[in-house]
Length: 138
Image (cartoon, rainbow, N blue to C red):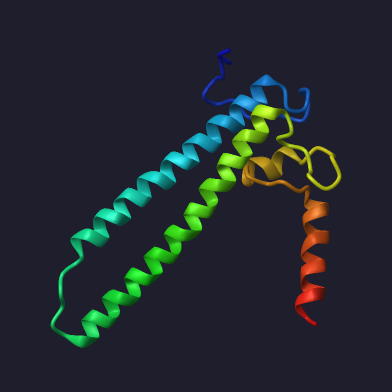
């Protein structure tokens, strides 16, 4: 089933929550984000391969190794992000997307637009972060 969305469509509070148009909007947003990450990954791999020269100066080599480590760490974070995007796509397919995993309440459209992989409402996220802080301080 194909949903026709205008290019300027934005979900609003005055339409039914997670209707077909909203789900399609977020599906497209997630797919575009994933494609962008994959494109950046390919560019990084190419850059790492192109930079695989043996630098004679030890300072240059150290600097190059540091840059390489930073890029690889960023790629690892993006790999984890892709799995979160894939999980969000599955939630769209099974109908649970947009609902807080903790309370079952709808997550605000503003939050989903800003962070389409969100699984918790702002309130539940804040509770979660407060608990994390308490345990981290022990």
